[in-house]
Length: 375
Image (cartoon, rainbow, N blue to C red; front, side, top):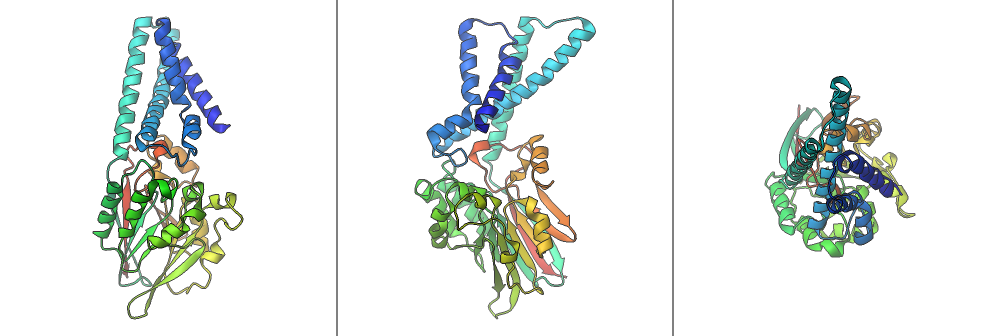
């Protein structure tokens, strides 16, 4: 129902702000109406033909193209609303109304500008992730320990095996002691994206690869993926923890993880974030690194005893204006480094991007590298 309401609002606004403002022949008007109607109803159409909006089983170029078209229309409607407000003020102050030729020029300018912005944002989403480095020092940290953080890889039909292989190579070149992934690893069924996902087996770290589920794991039927993670040597620590020990048996730190709140909606054996279970039996003298897909859980993680929390989910906000909205819906956390009562959190921008909204401006994909050093 929400998908249809959004589609109806977007189409209504696009018709009122863009199509109705120009006089054109009936055929051209009908073409514009049908085109805008299809773009507005992109999400319901993906559900009908792709089976799952959040993990559509359609060819990647189709999903990404539909995303780019809808983003262009949203931007065009925004520009159109601003221009209509401006023209309304001009008509009151100067008693001048815009003619049809002028409005056609404005229409073309708005559509062209919006399409260009959407094209650039879509191309940016295809760029490889940048490495973002942090160094933290504390008396209880190991002498030297490197954590490489991935999040929101969203490996689906839009991601090629070569792209995943490049990311694996980029991560391995960083010489991590441990690799962590804070969820939304995949989108879809394993049978559909096996060649891409299997590339993750190439990840190499001295003490292994660890992850927690994000909401998209549950949208993609999390239980069906459990055997895959084992095959790929990725240890899931949903509401659990593991103590990292060096070759001499010395305890270095604790990796803990909490499940995503979406788990509560899927299956009797799944639970949402359980901090007591995640930190059960933890040695309090060791630094605790918490994996939590959603940054909004940071205060809970810090209160429970996590020294550093890693999260994702927001994709960095992706584009201006939307970034501020994303922050508001995630406890004010959207991208980068944060502190809460002396505890630390890093929210990654995401290593790839969800195909359903495939756009980036000013918030590039990233791989987060954290070096822990003893003070």
